Image 1 (tube, rainbow, N blue to C red):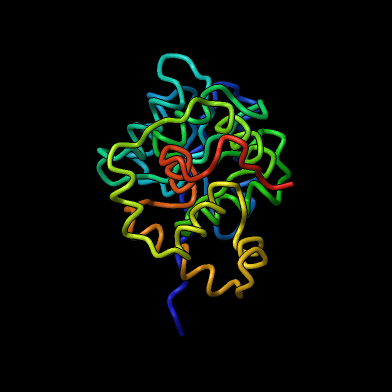
Image 2 (cartoon, helix red, strand yellow):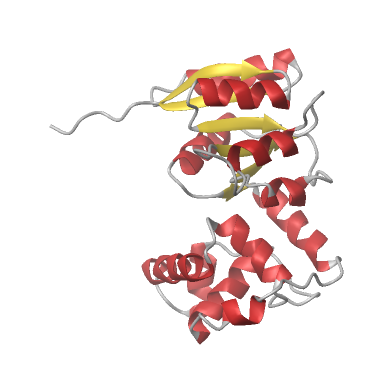
Length: 231
């Protein structure tokens, strides 16, 4: 028999006690998840996550002392020792800090009115190493990108040169918010082939996940200012 996997260790960080308690109860009710700590601000979130060796942190954005962006940078940024997965939770459809949170290293972004099952699913997906954005947040994020001045990414042309033409197409569709099934439909290939292409795109560009791929696509200018997102 194979050894049973240990439960995913979760920390819930929010300055509102009722919110923390609610999310903690939902997560703790799952046999494969366990809440190992709570925090009322970003500084405490970093300390608790490191002390308890958390796998995933559910992180509010707006907290006293240290906000969720800085806390995410400390836990999941490029210079973080033993990086921790972070899912940002916000009340707003597109929090003004969403772009900064994703660049800081967040692996997911959900609204606080997320359904119970979707929250649990998000923790599992992010713990497994994937990225997750609420569909409405993805659409709004893409719309926000589309209205920003084009942000030049130094060395983007050289990095894009590593991709095959098909991988370039896949990156453009990721940047427009398409999931694997939608990319497969657009390119007339099976989903397993799409997964292979996505994996190669991330590897060749040195990107951690699809969230970083969306940011790269816009900063590299391969998704036009009028590029659409998911319907």
